[in-house]
Length: 175
Figure (cartoon, rainbow, N blue to C red):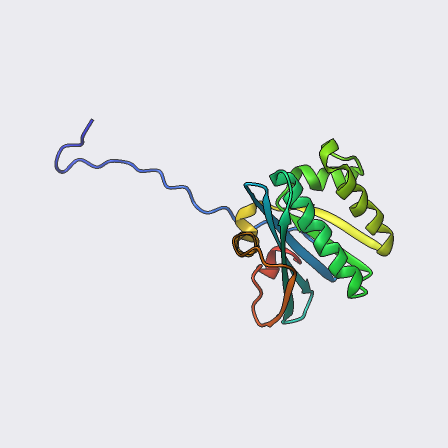
């Protein structure tokens, strides 16, 4: 039904969702994401330290069989990077609710992931604290873009250090 001239119509507009407050307890956090298409994955991570303007991003690419495997590759990549940097306490933030729950419960969500999942669980012994937390993709969209770019370019492991405002708003991490 079309409104007549001079008649007002009511439009409902949804407001953007406010950012979550993850209340991360560690001073160091790695935000990760994986991207998958046609057997190829790209993964990315952004590492931030509370109170620091420095941050690091890294990406990697390879092959896997589904999107959940790509997300797990991102988590493994971030954990290996943190181990190599001698980080002992870290929180890992992912938009994969299934993997966050599985890692917190230490139960593999899919038998196809068993080898990589077991590898991730064995990396836990390298940390005194390693928390896994879920956040919606819309709050880590820049990490998602990095993962997609990594998959498209099929670039092998790369890292870059940045200064200033990081790709993920620190307000959602520590509050």
